[in-house]
Image (cartoon, rainbow, N blue to C red; front, side):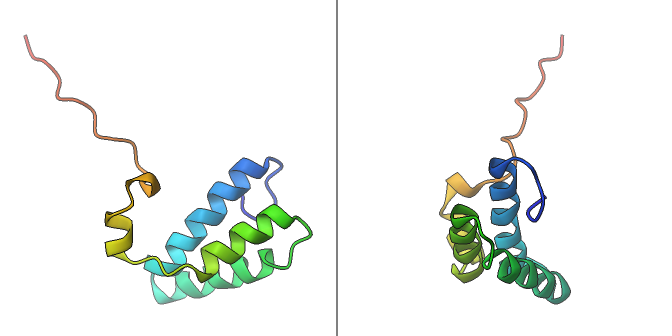
Amino acid sequence: MATSGPDRRFRAEAILELGLVRALGTPAQQEKALSVLNWLASSDDRILVEMAVWSRDTKLTKEYLKDAPALTLLPPPAPPSKSR
């Protein structure tokens, strides 16, 4: 999706996710994510280039992510169901 999606917003979301994988994935996943981010950083699309460079160069740590609720990728848990 990050490299060929037709809609920029979905490509941008995938680029941000590559940044998370680059920071928190396994070594093999990190290497692949970095490779894709480097490739995207040479794109002709200035906006995607900026996102790829940010995702590649920003140091995301578990502590940083814990303190950044706007980066939460999962929806909040469902409220408890009421039993009758």
